[in-house]
Structure formats: structure tokens, C-alpha cells
Amino acid sequence: MNLALENTTPYSQLLPRELRGLGAIIDDAFNTEKLCDFLRIISLDVVSFIQTSTFLDSLKTFWEKEAKKYLKLLRKAEERLILRIQETYLEIAKRIHNANLNGLPIISDLLNSIEDALKFRQAYGDPSFYMMALGMLNGLCNELLKRNRLDILNGLVRIEHFSFNDKSFFRAFTFYEEHTDFEELNAIFNMKDSDAPWLPWFLLQRAHECWRVLPKQISSIQLSYSSQQESLKSSNQLNAYHFWNDLRKGKDGREQPYFFTLEPIKRLIKSMIRQIFIHINTKRDQATIPDKIHSIILLLDGDVLCLKVNLSNNEASVYQLKKFNVDSAPFRFIKILLKNPGKTIPLGDISNTQSVSKFFERTCLKGVLSEIFFSKPTKHAVVFHTNEILFPEIDQRAKLALEELLPTLKLY
Image 1 (cartoon, rainbow, N blue to C red):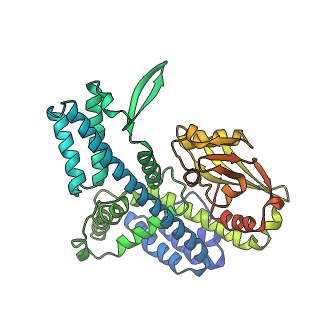
Image 2: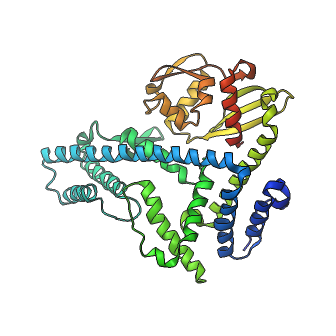
Image 3: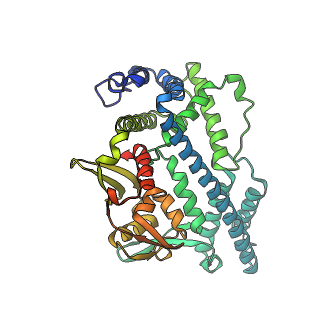
């Protein structure tokens, strides 16, 4: 089994003196031949080293703070989605009853199943109860679509279409902003596409917890599906505990939890090392950063929102802020903003996000970057000042905030 990363120089030689021990551990992990040994070293030794390293304290604090902010946003998005599902179900059920359609067996069965899911919150497994209810609600909408009774869904469900050869085709049902908000936040856990800087440390800590659980403790773990966070703590981890336990016994293991398969783990490690290198270089140059920066530029490179930092010596660094889905409302909106500096752009005309603050959160512009590049004449409108801001024109507080932000960004 070839586990090696793509670099040829050992990490024990690349990392500075304070982190050579970490480099040696990572080298050992990627030189091992057994998947079990690889995962044990990554989950136990790498995480233990980082946990006890004072050299990385500020980086760990940033990761953990960002993870906490994300989980709080996810929890609120879940609560809004559950409420939307409940309200939508009740209104659709009422309209179906008034239209005398509740006598149809398939519609009656779907209504009863949705009611049971929302009422009893049964532990169906993964996905959680509200995602099961959402799936059945989609099925109910499809049944109404087949019967040409979309009038029952008016004002409750958004019907999305796509065009092909000048014809419009049905694509999906969405339950307005609450649905899209949750899906965008939840997609962060797709490690293939996610660039969330806190995600590697968050998931490796989960792996660390799984490895440390003793086999005799597994049977006492209680499953919960009330929220995405609880699912992470119960269903995914229980699967992981069994996986580790099988590996200890020399078995191949059950189906691996998604963040313990080889390619995602390799991406996690590479992403974490990249951030550590940025952190190291920033610590070395921190005292002189303000004198080196000439200007900062906000730009789109295809579907990626970037921050370009021009230095006084004519060198530049480009950081990735956000990789967009090109069909998403935030991408359409940011394109219009960057093409129209100085103009007031109403948010609601383009995006289904009704809050400017929420838009900045979604596009990784919350904080100092939104303050430097944008202004908010109202809660529902944005003004983009200009693509390039000269560093001397930025006030001292924003300079310090920018200095703290740059080490946490991903180089593009």
C-alpha cells in the first residue's frame, strides 16, 4: 500500500526545530505499510503532539474558535429548517384535506409517515429524523406534481427548473431559505470541496476520541439524531468505534466512516501542514508585515473568491477565501458586486439571503474584509468600494485585524 505524500523531502527536515517531532511522526505515518498503523499514528500521535505544542497555540485557538462559530450557525440553521418542515407539512396536509386528496393511499401513507417522524423523532439512523421527514415531504410534493396539483404547494415550496434546448425541466423542490442555508452549511463536511481551515483539526480530534474509546465502552453509547451535531457525536462515532475495534482485532473493519478513509485523511493532513507552514512564516515576519504590504485586492478567479496581497517589493501572495458553486445565489451576487464598484446593490434582487451579514458569512468576508471593501447603507443592500485598497489608507485597527487574519487563510 503506497501511503506516501507527494513531497520528496521528509517533513522532519521541512518543519522548524520546534515542530521536527511532528514532522517525524507524519513521516512515520506515511512510511507505514498497514492502514491500521497509519490511522493509529495520525489519530493518536499527530493529534497528541499538536494538542501539547505551545508553538501552535494561536493556530489551535483559531481553529477551535472557527469550529465553534460554525457549529453554532449549523445548530441555528437546523432549528430553522425543522420549523420550516413542520409548518410546511401542516399547511400542505390542510390543503390536501380541503382538496379531498387525503383518501388516496400513497398520499395518506406519506402524510402519516411525515407526521410520525416529526412527532416521535425516531432514531431512523443516519440521516436524522428531520432529513427523513424532508425526503418524504419531497415525495409528497412529487405525488402532487404527478396529479397536476401544484396549486396546493403555492407559497410553500419553491420548484426549481433547468433549461435544455429552450425547454424547461423540473429539477428539485426546495423549502426556501431555511433549506438552502442548511445545505450550504452542511456541505462544509464534504472534504473533497471544503476549504474550511478548521475542518482538519476538528475531524482529527474526532478520530482521536474514537481511538481512545475502549471496546467495553462501545455498548453503552446512546444514539441521538436530534441534530447534525448530535449525529456526529453518536451515529458517526459509533460506526468509527466499531471500525477501530475491528482494526485492533486484525479485521478489515466495517465500512469506514467517511473521514477515516485514506484519501480524505491525506487531504486533511496536507491541508493542516499547509496551514502550519503559513503560520510559521507569519510568526517569523509578523513584526514587519505592516511595512511590507502595499495594497490588497479582492477578485474572482473563475469560481474562486481571492484576496491578493501586493507587497512593497513587488511580490504578491494570493489567498483563497471561498470556492463557489457557480449556480448559487451568493456567486451571482458577488459577481455583480465586483463589477459595480460604488453602486448600491439590493441583496434581495439577486440572492435569496435577506441579510447582508449572512451574505458576508457565507462568502467568508465577515469581519475586517467586509469592513475594508464594503459598506451597508441598509440591512438589505451592499456597496462595494473598489477592488484595490492601499494599505496606508486602512485605519490602524483594521490593519491589526488584517495582520491576524492573513496567517489563517489558505494560499491559492
